Amino acid sequence: MSRQRKDGTIVMKILCAVFFLIFTTLYVSCYQPDILAVTQHVLSGGATHYNSVIGTVLITLVLWLVQMAIYGWTRLSHRAHALTYFPSMLLLAVLTDVSSNLTTDNYLGVWVWLFPLLMIVYAGVVWLFRQLEPMEPVPFSIGLFSRVAWINMLQMCLMVLIVCCIGCSDTVFHCRMRMESDMLRGDYKAAVNVGKNVEVTDSSLTMLRILALSKTGTLPERLFEYPLVGGSQAMLPNRTSVRLMMLPEDSVYSTFGVVLKEKLSPMTYLRHVNNSRKYASQASRDWQLCGYLLDRNLDAFVQTLPRYYDIRKPLPKAYREALVIYNHLRKKPRIIYKEAVMDADYDDFKKAFYSSSNGWARRANVKGNFGKSYWYYYIAVNK
Image (tube, rainbow, N blue to C red; front, side):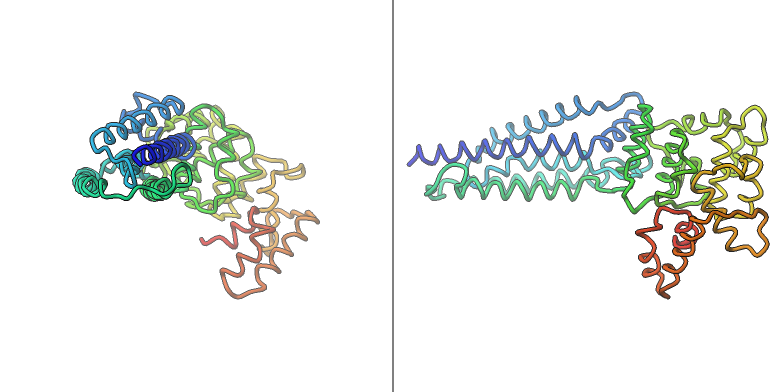
């Protein structure tokens, strides 16, 4: 009987260990590497940088050593063996419980008192199971499909769920940190594709997308393929609503080659740059034109466009769409612009959008075919 129980627990312990190691490795290396990177960056004041491979190995190893120490102390070997992983799982959750307010909030927050409290409760639970363990009946089955094994696996799954609920799951923050990590490496093409199908955003993510698209030369072509908020105010960092966590602000202003001592609004700054022969460039001109489009300021856009582009030649997608909607909205347009295919598409957009009186239904009607157009941003997106 003793041999049977021992054999059953060996398989169960191996199963728990393998499950823990696989989950921790994947969670740290695939889901939270950018969150851990920004955490290290902020806590070290930018003095050190996170290496995903080394970080994954070290975190997994340390947490496993914690589990082995807890097992050596508790000797829980049967139905409650999975509880020896609880402190390691909780530490992993605390480590990744990071918000976008990391630079202003206390990193540990409530964990300063909650973690010790949970450890006290945990010690009581362990003591209780230690008293009950000698009374457990000898299992009728052993191995991978034994009751003991799957009771422990259920506990492991519950702890995984707890870790995932506590750890950072903010999609927008994940996208921002992934983009900042890519741009720190100079990989702007990868940054452009981060979260391209994510429907939520904020002003900081909007700025990062503008920067990445500009660096890849596709700003006026692809800008309105993404959800955008904040208008032109989201184009440059202001350290409040538009912030960078790891990427230096100089990496934004290096696009234009000048940083002014006086803090100006993005559009005032861009106009200043473009009025300078020394600093004006195609990139800065596109930023200014896209700023007008973000603010839905079609008149300023149309007034400025001929200074930077020959409108008789092919124009980027966003500019063509803006000219089409401008010609449909103005009785006496400053620029007459006709493009048969795009005019027909805009007519289809209007018919689909105004076929319903309900705002949500209107957006749903045009989202599939026109969700990546300037028309959708101008008319369907809440102002």
